[in-house]
Image 1 (cartoon, rainbow, N blue to C red):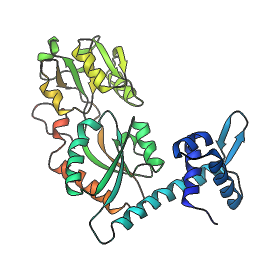
Image 2 (cartoon, helix red, strand yellow; image 1 turned 45 degrees about the horizontal axis):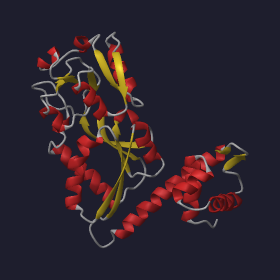
Image 3 (cartoon, rainbow, N blue to C red; image 1 turned 45 degrees about the vertical axis):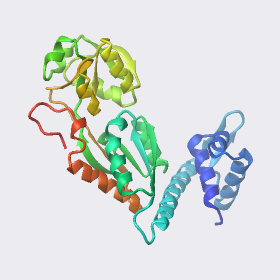
Image 4 (cartoon, one colour; image 1 turned 180 degrees about the vertical axis):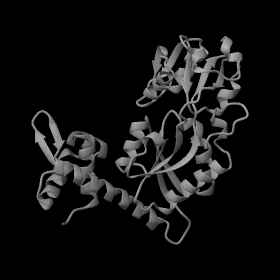
Length: 314
């Protein structure tokens, strides 16, 4: 077969975006170039990748789904090959593409990026942010070399490097009576207004915490932003439950308090997800090793809310 990497990228984008027009927009090329690439590849492999339906766009055929999986794997390997070639004869250089759970990113990413850029000044880092499902989709589509996410998103075909346990904690206004406590039980919050972080998987996780104890949260506000949840708590509109705590939360004592929960609850683990069975470029391996070194040095301890006299969950 005779095809180019550029043609494969055109086909992959069409399958991922579900539209020739969307693929053309993303890649900044003409729709006719996309159509030609699809036609050329289908002619060589002898079967259709997509079904064209007037007024409805395209859909992927069963054989097309498997072909797109192979194409994405090839594109990932080609990018890794390019990175490896750039590092021949010298230290690890190139680029690292990182997808990260957006709500957690502001808390744990700064020390990672600071240390890595200091030790690898010639490396570029691309950050892709989203909710947990979007974060993992970047990895699956070959747009990211690794993903920062919770262990609950790990499936067959993934490798997981744990960084820290992230027990849920309570964010409550400083003038609330419970704010004077050093910790609380969920039952202490029963009936009080709650501000829910309403993201895929996240809302179900927090709701399930209450259900396990035979309770139901009194949700009065929902938001997809942890910062908006923080502002609403500070404004006295209710409390919120979160997992990863930005270090500055602990010092904003005039507005709210951070309280650990005393209930025995499942503690999710936050870490690095990569695709299994794929040899990683030197620069990506170096990035992961540096994250593990930071874990060992306690760099993430300040963003974990634990009960007094308890060590951070590893």
